Length: 233
Image 1 (cartoon, helix red, strand yellow):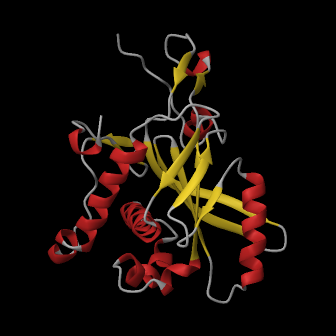
Image 2 (cartoon, helix red, strand yellow):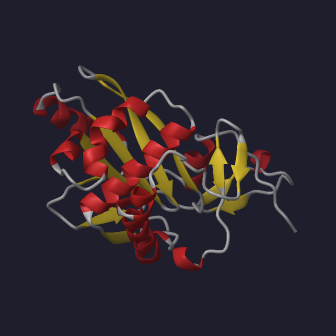
């Protein structure tokens, strides 16, 4: 199933603890923005979904992921910003300085955000978390946006944003202008050492090889909220 042919979308809203059938609307976004650069970003995301995200990647499989770095990061930041605003999240302030980047008028303002990617693999959901008590294969088919806390010795705790799109997980780390390149380099090395087979994406390369041996789909899903699988006959 491709993004352009998908018949149903589900959006889970934490503040309501409910799944919505339509994407939450940000009402104060101007029409030219919605019909202009934001629409273009969504169009690029649909193309990327059809080319890459639609396929469930199997464990140990190696994937060549091809993307336009800036288009991808702008879209991910747009998704995170929308989520932050819908939930009145504490990190909503972090996106204001990034608006010129999201709008595509300044690449320089996006340099304060590092982007990483890795793949999650299908796994077995434990019996106690399935309604009928029968373990089942759990594939990474959901799409989620959330927080991730990561602590680096000498740097401290950094609150990151994560965007999970089926098998793909993207991590965005936000740095303050005063943080030195040494701090960023140290964070890079620590983060990549802790997250299995994660890769930092860079504008200098449009293609990277990703090995699907990061987190299991169930561990990633269970960590996002308390769930129980209900199997419909």
